[in-house]
Length: 157
Image 1 (tube, one colour):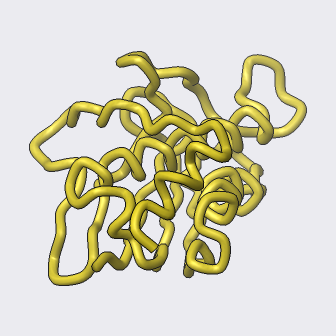
Image 2 (cartoon, rainbow, N blue to C red):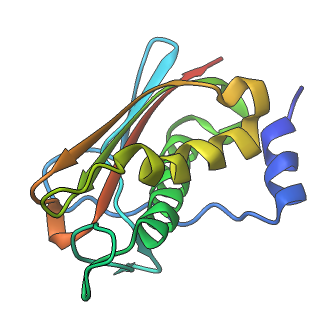
């Protein structure tokens, strides 16, 4: 089993990004017993926010659900990077919980589909060990104007 998740990431052609620096007074990940909790991760790559705005369908100048789904995937990658920096990716036993927040325009109710971007990525990487409990919540605003924020809890050895 040693190195199984590193190998799986390589098979999928996925490189974990650099851990996103906190924008406040917190740590990106914290281990308590056999669980690692991540702080909320936003769609940042190479030090830059990749998308901003509220999510809706069919409104001009709005983030589409498909764009937000891709952003949620990036958030999950950032969360895994935080876990990796804390304990190493190969120490993950299973994904326990995903919480996703979606900055939603009035009337948008597709939050579960947006957060599927994170859930689907975790399933691709971890298979059955990636099946998790989840919440997908619509909110008025998120930090730095991003459309999605994701936090995860994983069980580790």
